[in-house]
Amino acid sequence: MTTTVALIGANGHGRWHRRRIAEVAAAGRLRLVALADLRPLEPDPPVPPEVLVFTDHRELLAEAAPDVVVICTPPHTHLQIALDAIAAGCDLLLEKPPVASLAAHLTLTASLTAAGRACQVGFQALGSTAWQRFRDALPGLGTLGGITATASWQRDDLYYTRSPWAGRRVVAGRPVIDGALVNPLAHAVMQALASAQAVGAGRPRQLAAERYRVRPIEVEDTAFARITFESGLHVMIAVTLAGEDFIAGEIAARGPAGRAVLEYPTDRLALPGDAEPRPVEGRADLLTNLVEHREHGTPLLVPLEVTADFTAVLEALTVPDVPMPHPLDDSAVLTEGPKRTIPGVNDLLRKVVETMALPSEMGVPWAVRPFTQRLPVT
Image (cartoon, rainbow, N blue to C red; front, side, top):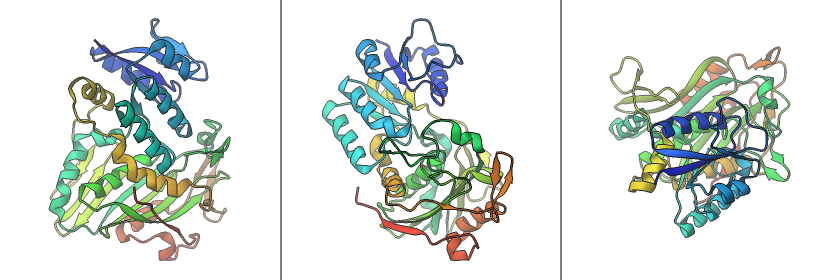
Protein backbone atom coordinates (compact mmCIF):
# COMPACT_ATOMS: atom_id res chain seq x y z
CA MET A 1 0.00 0.00 0.00
CA THR A 2 1.32 3.44 -0.94
CA THR A 3 1.72 5.77 2.04
CA THR A 4 -0.89 8.54 1.99
CA VAL A 5 0.06 12.08 3.01
CA ALA A 6 -1.83 15.22 3.95
CA LEU A 7 -0.52 18.74 4.43
CA ILE A 8 -1.96 21.06 7.07
CA GLY A 9 -0.91 24.64 6.39
CA ALA A 10 -0.79 24.61 2.59
CA ASN A 11 -0.13 28.31 1.90
CA GLY A 12 3.00 30.35 2.55
CA HIS A 13 5.88 27.99 3.26
CA GLY A 14 3.37 25.18 2.80
CA ARG A 15 3.68 25.79 -0.95
CA TRP A 16 7.27 24.48 -0.71
CA HIS A 17 5.91 21.32 0.91
CA ARG A 18 3.29 20.99 -1.82
CA ARG A 19 6.03 21.02 -4.44
CA ARG A 20 8.21 18.59 -2.52
CA ILE A 21 5.31 16.19 -1.90
CA ALA A 22 4.53 16.28 -5.64
CA GLU A 23 8.14 15.35 -6.44
CA VAL A 24 8.14 12.42 -4.02
CA ALA A 25 4.71 11.31 -5.23
CA ALA A 26 5.95 11.37 -8.84
CA ALA A 27 8.63 8.89 -7.79
CA GLY A 28 5.88 6.56 -6.51
CA ARG A 29 6.86 6.85 -2.83
CA LEU A 30 3.60 8.35 -1.54
CA ARG A 31 0.20 9.73 -2.52
CA LEU A 32 -1.14 13.17 -1.56
CA VAL A 33 -4.75 12.88 -0.40
CA ALA A 34 -5.61 16.18 1.28
CA LEU A 35 -4.63 19.78 1.97
CA ALA A 36 -5.87 22.14 4.66
CA ASP A 37 -5.55 25.87 5.22
CA LEU A 38 -7.70 28.55 6.81
CA ARG A 39 -7.39 30.68 3.67
CA PRO A 40 -8.23 29.77 0.06
CA LEU A 41 -5.34 27.84 -1.46
CA GLU A 42 -2.84 29.78 -3.50
CA PRO A 43 -2.98 28.46 -7.09
CA ASP A 44 0.77 27.81 -7.43
CA PRO A 45 1.46 24.93 -7.37
CA PRO A 46 -1.80 23.59 -8.82
CA VAL A 47 -3.92 21.35 -6.61
CA PRO A 48 -4.45 17.93 -8.22
CA PRO A 49 -8.17 17.36 -8.84
CA GLU A 50 -8.29 14.19 -6.73
CA VAL A 51 -6.91 15.93 -3.62
CA LEU A 52 -9.43 16.91 -0.96
CA VAL A 53 -9.27 20.47 0.40
CA PHE A 54 -10.32 21.52 3.91
CA THR A 55 -10.29 24.58 6.12
CA ASP A 56 -10.46 22.54 9.36
CA HIS A 57 -7.64 20.09 10.09
CA ARG A 58 -9.93 17.92 12.22
CA GLU A 59 -12.27 17.39 9.28
CA LEU A 60 -9.25 16.49 7.15
CA LEU A 61 -8.10 13.88 9.65
CA ALA A 62 -11.55 12.34 9.93
CA GLU A 63 -12.40 12.24 6.22
CA ALA A 64 -9.05 11.73 4.48
CA ALA A 65 -7.48 9.44 7.15
CA PRO A 66 -3.87 9.97 5.98
CA ASP A 67 -0.95 7.83 7.10
CA VAL A 68 1.37 10.84 7.43
CA VAL A 69 0.57 14.47 8.17
CA VAL A 70 2.91 17.35 7.33
CA ILE A 71 2.25 20.26 9.71
CA CYS A 72 3.30 23.68 8.40
CA THR A 73 1.13 26.04 10.43
CA PRO A 74 2.23 28.93 12.70
CA PRO A 75 4.55 27.46 15.36
CA HIS A 76 2.28 28.30 18.29
CA THR A 77 -0.44 26.06 16.76
CA HIS A 78 1.76 23.00 16.29
CA LEU A 79 1.07 21.13 19.52
CA GLN A 80 -2.71 20.81 19.30
CA ILE A 81 -2.68 19.93 15.61
CA ALA A 82 0.05 17.34 16.24
CA LEU A 83 -1.90 15.78 19.12
CA ASP A 84 -5.03 15.61 16.95
CA ALA A 85 -3.05 13.93 14.16
CA ILE A 86 -1.52 11.38 16.52
CA ALA A 87 -4.96 10.57 17.92
CA ALA A 88 -6.07 9.95 14.33
CA GLY A 89 -3.25 7.39 13.89
CA CYS A 90 -0.86 9.53 11.84
CA ASP A 91 2.91 9.87 11.78
CA LEU A 92 4.20 13.45 11.59
CA LEU A 93 6.57 15.67 9.69
CA LEU A 94 6.47 18.73 11.94
CA GLU A 95 7.92 22.00 10.72
CA LYS A 96 10.48 23.78 12.86
CA PRO A 97 10.35 25.00 15.55
CA PRO A 98 8.39 21.96 16.74
CA VAL A 99 6.79 23.30 19.93
CA ALA A 100 6.94 26.37 22.16
CA SER A 101 8.08 24.89 25.49
CA LEU A 102 9.66 21.91 27.18
CA ALA A 103 6.30 21.07 28.72
CA ALA A 104 4.80 20.90 25.23
CA HIS A 105 7.80 18.86 24.09
CA LEU A 106 7.18 16.34 26.87
CA THR A 107 3.45 16.24 26.13
CA LEU A 108 4.08 15.54 22.46
CA THR A 109 6.72 12.91 23.26
CA ALA A 110 4.35 11.11 25.63
CA SER A 111 1.56 11.13 23.06
CA LEU A 112 3.85 9.73 20.35
CA THR A 113 5.12 6.98 22.68
CA ALA A 114 1.66 5.97 23.84
CA ALA A 115 0.35 5.78 20.28
CA GLY A 116 3.49 4.20 18.79
CA ARG A 117 3.76 6.97 16.24
CA ALA A 118 6.79 8.76 14.76
CA CYS A 119 7.63 12.45 14.47
CA GLN A 120 10.27 13.91 12.20
CA VAL A 121 11.11 17.62 12.70
CA GLY A 122 11.77 19.81 9.66
CA PHE A 123 15.39 20.78 10.29
CA GLN A 124 16.28 19.64 6.78
CA ALA A 125 19.94 20.70 6.89
CA LEU A 126 20.53 17.81 9.33
CA GLY A 127 19.84 15.47 6.43
CA SER A 128 22.74 16.67 4.29
CA THR A 129 25.92 14.78 3.47
CA ALA A 130 27.87 17.98 4.14
CA TRP A 131 26.53 18.06 7.70
CA GLN A 132 27.48 14.42 8.23
CA ARG A 133 31.04 15.11 7.07
CA PHE A 134 31.30 18.23 9.22
CA ARG A 135 30.01 16.32 12.26
CA ASP A 136 32.37 13.41 11.65
CA ALA A 137 35.34 15.79 11.36
CA LEU A 138 34.78 17.47 14.73
CA PRO A 139 36.59 14.92 16.94
CA GLY A 140 39.68 15.23 14.74
CA LEU A 141 39.98 18.93 15.52
CA GLY A 142 41.00 18.19 19.11
CA THR A 143 39.59 19.97 22.13
CA LEU A 144 37.28 22.58 20.68
CA GLY A 145 37.65 26.24 21.57
CA GLY A 146 34.01 26.79 20.66
CA ILE A 147 31.27 26.21 18.12
CA THR A 148 29.73 29.19 16.34
CA ALA A 149 26.84 30.07 14.05
CA THR A 150 26.75 33.22 11.92
CA ALA A 151 24.18 34.56 9.46
CA SER A 152 23.42 37.98 8.01
CA TRP A 153 20.10 38.27 6.21
CA GLN A 154 17.95 41.25 5.24
CA ARG A 155 14.21 41.38 5.90
CA ASP A 156 12.28 44.55 5.06
CA ASP A 157 9.11 46.01 6.56
CA LEU A 158 6.88 43.77 4.43
CA TYR A 159 8.30 40.67 6.13
CA TYR A 160 6.59 41.75 9.35
CA THR A 161 3.21 42.09 7.65
CA ARG A 162 3.26 38.54 6.26
CA SER A 163 0.86 37.26 8.95
CA PRO A 164 -1.03 38.49 12.03
CA TRP A 165 1.56 36.84 14.30
CA ALA A 166 4.67 38.18 12.53
CA GLY A 167 6.93 40.05 14.90
CA ARG A 168 4.67 39.33 17.88
CA ARG A 169 5.40 37.80 21.30
CA VAL A 170 1.88 36.66 22.20
CA VAL A 171 -1.30 36.13 20.17
CA ALA A 172 -4.56 35.13 21.84
CA GLY A 173 -2.70 34.38 25.05
CA ARG A 174 -0.24 31.96 23.43
CA PRO A 175 3.50 32.60 23.01
CA VAL A 176 4.42 33.30 19.41
CA ILE A 177 7.74 32.12 18.04
CA ASP A 178 8.99 34.66 15.54
CA GLY A 179 12.34 36.01 16.73
CA ALA A 180 15.38 35.67 14.49
CA LEU A 181 16.92 33.01 16.73
CA VAL A 182 13.92 30.72 16.89
CA ASN A 183 12.20 31.07 13.52
CA PRO A 184 13.97 32.34 10.36
CA LEU A 185 17.44 31.45 11.69
CA ALA A 186 16.39 28.50 13.83
CA HIS A 187 18.39 26.21 11.54
CA ALA A 188 21.60 27.99 12.54
CA VAL A 189 20.82 27.48 16.23
CA MET A 190 19.82 23.83 15.79
CA GLN A 191 22.87 23.04 13.66
CA ALA A 192 25.20 24.54 16.28
CA LEU A 193 23.47 22.67 19.12
CA ALA A 194 23.64 19.42 17.14
CA SER A 195 27.38 20.01 16.66
CA ALA A 196 27.79 20.26 20.43
CA GLN A 197 25.82 17.04 20.84
CA ALA A 198 28.10 15.36 18.30
CA VAL A 199 31.20 15.99 20.43
CA GLY A 200 29.58 14.82 23.65
CA ALA A 201 29.30 18.24 25.29
CA GLY A 202 26.37 17.12 27.45
CA ARG A 203 23.32 19.32 27.83
CA PRO A 204 23.12 23.12 27.56
CA ARG A 205 23.07 24.67 31.01
CA GLN A 206 23.48 28.46 30.70
CA LEU A 207 22.25 31.06 28.24
CA ALA A 208 23.54 34.62 27.95
CA ALA A 209 21.80 36.59 25.22
CA GLU A 210 21.60 40.08 23.79
CA ARG A 211 18.58 40.77 21.59
CA TYR A 212 17.96 43.87 19.51
CA ARG A 213 15.33 45.27 17.11
CA VAL A 214 15.57 47.94 14.45
CA ARG A 215 11.82 48.53 14.02
CA PRO A 216 8.79 48.58 16.37
CA ILE A 217 8.27 44.83 16.63
CA GLU A 218 8.10 42.68 19.76
CA VAL A 219 10.82 40.16 18.90
CA GLU A 220 14.49 40.37 17.98
CA ASP A 221 15.80 40.81 14.46
CA THR A 222 19.44 40.84 15.61
CA ALA A 223 20.77 38.59 18.34
CA PHE A 224 23.86 37.25 20.03
CA ALA A 225 23.59 34.21 22.29
CA ARG A 226 26.30 32.30 24.15
CA ILE A 227 25.21 28.86 25.32
CA THR A 228 27.37 26.97 27.80
CA PHE A 229 27.22 23.18 27.96
CA GLU A 230 27.90 20.77 30.83
CA SER A 231 31.39 20.08 29.48
CA GLY A 232 32.20 23.81 29.53
CA LEU A 233 31.99 24.09 25.74
CA HIS A 234 30.62 27.42 24.52
CA VAL A 235 28.34 27.78 21.50
CA MET A 236 28.08 31.35 20.18
CA ILE A 237 25.24 32.42 17.88
CA ALA A 238 25.49 35.77 16.04
CA VAL A 239 22.70 36.52 13.57
CA THR A 240 20.80 39.44 12.07
CA LEU A 241 17.90 40.20 9.75
CA ALA A 242 19.23 43.75 9.32
CA GLY A 243 22.46 42.76 7.64
CA GLU A 244 24.79 44.30 5.09
CA ASP A 245 26.48 41.73 2.82
CA PHE A 246 24.64 38.41 2.78
CA ILE A 247 26.01 35.59 4.94
CA ALA A 248 23.85 32.57 4.19
CA GLY A 249 24.61 30.75 7.43
CA GLU A 250 27.87 29.32 8.70
CA ILE A 251 28.53 26.77 11.44
CA ALA A 252 32.16 26.68 12.51
CA ALA A 253 34.29 24.80 15.03
CA ARG A 254 37.96 25.28 15.84
CA GLY A 255 40.51 23.24 17.72
CA PRO A 256 44.27 22.60 17.81
CA ALA A 257 44.11 20.68 14.51
CA GLY A 258 42.34 23.44 12.60
CA ARG A 259 38.92 24.80 11.74
CA ALA A 260 35.87 23.33 10.04
CA VAL A 261 33.17 25.51 8.46
CA LEU A 262 29.80 24.38 7.11
CA GLU A 263 27.57 26.75 5.11
CA TYR A 264 24.43 24.86 6.01
CA PRO A 265 21.91 26.35 3.50
CA THR A 266 24.16 25.57 0.51
CA ASP A 267 25.98 22.44 1.78
CA ARG A 268 29.40 23.98 1.20
CA LEU A 269 32.11 22.66 3.50
CA ALA A 270 35.69 23.59 4.40
CA LEU A 271 37.74 21.19 6.52
CA PRO A 272 41.33 21.67 7.75
CA GLY A 273 43.60 21.84 4.71
CA ASP A 274 40.90 23.12 2.35
CA ALA A 275 41.78 26.40 0.67
CA GLU A 276 38.11 27.36 0.34
CA PRO A 277 34.66 25.86 0.94
CA ARG A 278 33.57 23.29 -1.61
CA PRO A 279 30.08 22.01 -2.41
CA VAL A 280 29.17 18.57 -1.09
CA GLU A 281 26.32 16.88 -2.92
CA GLY A 282 23.61 14.90 -1.24
CA ARG A 283 20.74 15.82 1.03
CA ALA A 284 18.22 13.27 2.23
CA ASP A 285 14.59 14.31 1.99
CA LEU A 286 13.00 14.24 5.45
CA LEU A 287 9.57 13.18 4.18
CA THR A 288 11.06 10.29 2.19
CA ASN A 289 13.08 9.30 5.25
CA LEU A 290 9.87 9.27 7.33
CA VAL A 291 8.15 7.05 4.77
CA GLU A 292 11.15 4.69 4.81
CA HIS A 293 10.98 4.67 8.60
CA ARG A 294 7.34 3.58 8.43
CA GLU A 295 7.93 0.95 5.79
CA HIS A 296 11.35 -0.45 6.68
CA GLY A 297 12.30 0.87 10.12
CA THR A 298 14.96 3.23 8.72
CA PRO A 299 16.15 5.51 11.56
CA LEU A 300 14.70 9.00 11.46
CA LEU A 301 17.19 11.74 10.63
CA VAL A 302 15.60 14.35 12.92
CA PRO A 303 13.39 12.64 15.50
CA LEU A 304 11.67 14.89 18.00
CA GLU A 305 14.01 13.85 20.84
CA VAL A 306 17.10 15.36 19.20
CA THR A 307 15.44 18.79 19.25
CA ALA A 308 15.06 18.93 23.06
CA ASP A 309 18.08 21.22 23.47
CA PHE A 310 16.66 23.56 20.84
CA THR A 311 13.33 23.66 22.67
CA ALA A 312 15.09 24.47 25.95
CA VAL A 313 16.86 27.44 24.35
CA LEU A 314 13.68 28.54 22.53
CA GLU A 315 11.69 28.54 25.77
CA ALA A 316 14.37 30.55 27.56
CA LEU A 317 14.15 33.17 24.80
CA THR A 318 10.36 33.39 24.58
CA VAL A 319 8.88 33.04 28.08
CA PRO A 320 6.86 36.13 29.11
CA ASP A 321 9.32 37.39 31.73
CA VAL A 322 12.23 37.60 29.27
CA PRO A 323 13.05 41.27 28.60
CA MET A 324 11.84 42.74 25.33
CA PRO A 325 14.58 43.09 22.71
CA HIS A 326 16.40 46.39 23.03
CA PRO A 327 15.33 48.93 20.35
CA LEU A 328 18.18 50.52 18.42
CA ASP A 329 17.74 54.22 17.70
CA ASP A 330 18.43 56.16 14.52
CA SER A 331 22.09 56.63 15.42
CA ALA A 332 22.67 52.88 15.03
CA VAL A 333 20.33 52.14 12.12
CA LEU A 334 20.35 53.14 8.44
CA THR A 335 16.82 53.37 7.03
CA GLU A 336 16.30 53.25 3.24
CA GLY A 337 12.60 52.98 2.47
CA PRO A 338 11.33 49.67 3.85
CA LYS A 339 14.89 48.42 4.45
CA ARG A 340 16.76 48.89 7.73
CA THR A 341 20.43 48.04 8.19
CA ILE A 342 22.81 48.22 11.14
CA PRO A 343 26.01 49.76 9.73
CA GLY A 344 29.02 47.63 10.62
CA VAL A 345 26.93 44.70 11.78
CA ASN A 346 28.65 42.16 9.54
CA ASP A 347 32.07 43.02 10.96
CA LEU A 348 30.56 42.75 14.43
CA LEU A 349 29.09 39.31 13.72
CA ARG A 350 32.51 38.11 12.58
CA LYS A 351 34.23 39.59 15.62
CA VAL A 352 31.74 38.01 18.02
CA VAL A 353 32.25 34.49 16.69
CA GLU A 354 36.01 34.97 16.49
CA THR A 355 36.38 36.16 20.10
CA MET A 356 33.35 34.38 21.66
CA ALA A 357 32.56 37.73 23.34
CA LEU A 358 29.16 39.42 23.31
CA PRO A 359 28.85 42.99 21.95
CA SER A 360 28.40 44.45 25.44
CA GLU A 361 31.66 42.78 26.49
CA MET A 362 33.42 44.55 23.62
CA GLY A 363 32.10 47.99 24.49
CA VAL A 364 29.90 48.36 21.39
CA PRO A 365 28.17 51.74 21.93
CA TRP A 366 24.60 50.55 21.37
CA ALA A 367 24.97 47.24 23.21
CA VAL A 368 23.14 46.49 26.47
CA ARG A 369 23.89 43.96 29.18
CA PRO A 370 22.81 40.42 28.32
CA PHE A 371 20.11 38.60 30.17
CA THR A 372 21.29 35.29 31.56
CA GLN A 373 19.27 32.24 32.40
CA ARG A 374 19.93 28.75 33.66
CA LEU A 375 18.56 26.16 31.29
CA PRO A 376 16.53 23.30 32.77
CA VAL A 377 17.57 19.68 32.70
CA THR A 378 15.82 18.04 29.75
